[in-house]
Length: 140
Image (cartoon, rainbow, N blue to C red; front, side, top):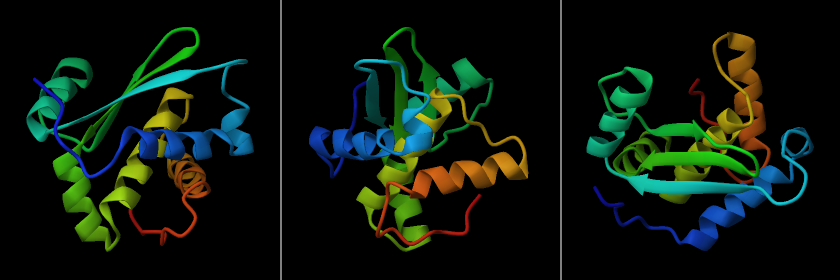
């Protein structure tokens, strides 16, 4: 499989993740020194395969995170078709939706989860801090 064309540049992805890394609560969980994250923007077919292989879920999803080692925090895979659909659904642009998913994926790499309502609320709070200008959507 190969990555798909998306309406964003690698510089945009770096900027979003850099803004997230500057949030004090997020920065506190980063390793000392430089840390890396690999991002793959792909399609629903590949996301379904990844989700089935690594999470036992046989359906496409919008974002998946894969833990790394050492200074490599891990990998984030994002479905571009889901970005497009969800941006329309939530009434904002594709870049904003991608930003939400990138920060969400980063939070998972750093140990945040959303198994309880309290955890979900904390993840949404942290997701939107670096995304000023993005209207908070009611999704959970």
